[in-house]
Image 1: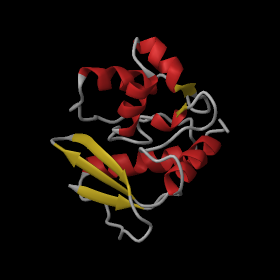
Image 2: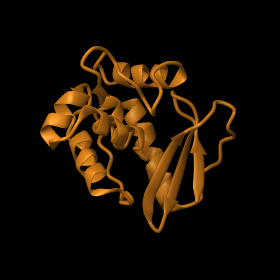
Image 3: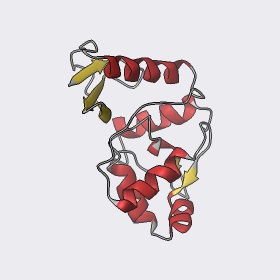
Length: 152
């Protein structure tokens, strides 16, 4: 089931399946909005709006777990980064006994941006990438999110 809500970073498509949040996609600005069709989609939409109103507001949602063991470890590390703070890919790699590139790959494949805050991971020399992009709209979104949280 899909819902598309408006947000400061553009329309967000919310996908729920089997009673869990499965995916959030940042869509093109022209994507039509669709209201929540079920209770979980409504809760997700409300909590996303609450985050945009106050970035310190935590998410409390049932989330799908179709990740590899390494992606689960990266997810746990991302969820431990408080709003307004950042960690480098290298810092997380050392913590996870991995490589910065592997951490970046896991962040790039994060199906739940905002809820699992991959935007809080930056390069050692600058902002780094977002959703696999190093320039353009995606980087503008990452910068906006970090500024919203007071990290940049």
